[in-house]
Image (tube, rainbow, N blue to C red; front, side, top):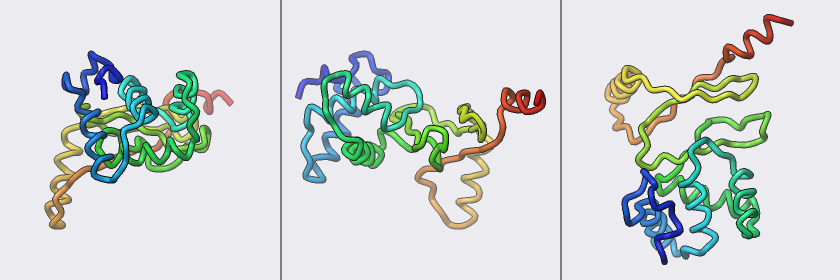
Length: 166
């Protein structure tokens, strides 16, 4: 397959397209094929800088002329999660938008999330002390951490101000 499916200057991929290689290897190991639809899905995700939901990806694919079902998108997102290219950005489904949020994580700096329980605003943050404490907790209980997901839920300043004005 041609590597030009991926953004040439993608900071998250090597010149040979590491996300491409990872996805191709995972599909091969699971008896799957790297179809043009899957390559387009991967390209859209590599080009996406923000959190996204499956229906966002579906709309972008349809604009490019691909007719995929939402079920197919979810199935392939699960493979991309398994490959370590993306992850779920939220633990629970967002009631306002009706779904789970994902983000492209391959070779991104690790971060955690603050999520407003009223408007859904997401703020990414990183505090080294949190990672140190998580490592200590894992070690204390005999765990070797492979990954973690920290999501703090609360009310953002905009929503707090809006509620105070009522």
